[in-house]
Amino acid sequence: MPRYNLYNQTATNPTVPPKHIVPMLYPVAPFENAVFSENNIAVSNSTIQATINYLIKATELNALIQSLQSSRFVSEQDETIRLTRQFIFDQADKDMPEIVSTLKSEITKEQKWWAGLRRLAENLRRRNSA
Image 1: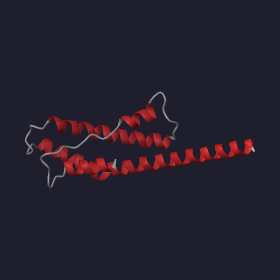
Image 2 (image 1 turned 90 degrees about the horizontal axis):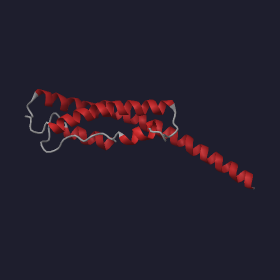
Image 3 (image 1 turned 90 degrees about the vertical axis):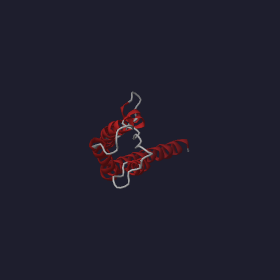
Image 4 (image 1 turned 30 degrees about the vertical axis):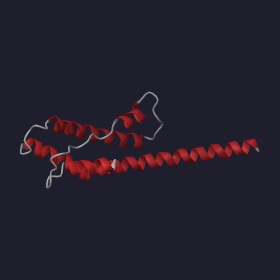
């Protein structure tokens, strides 16, 4: 996801706005499926909250990105376009990296917890078979 932020910063840079690229949508489906589907993974409340925070921000930015994508033929001098690009740039530069970092930290905690549980189960299995 840091690459999405970097790409979107480049695509919306207010000082040197590129003419040939538009921002790309942040991924949401894998996170929605992992946490909110019928066969969701078991995760802590803090991981769920971090995922929700990411999904809220990603959905907000995706709506703005889609508006830019559909306004290809509007003048770059249009104030709404300029403000939209600036907002996406600011979010990709400040808020989104923090949200992604928190989500990554929570996922890492979950992975460590599950790895510990697997080691415990393996040790018990070895002990019982000996």
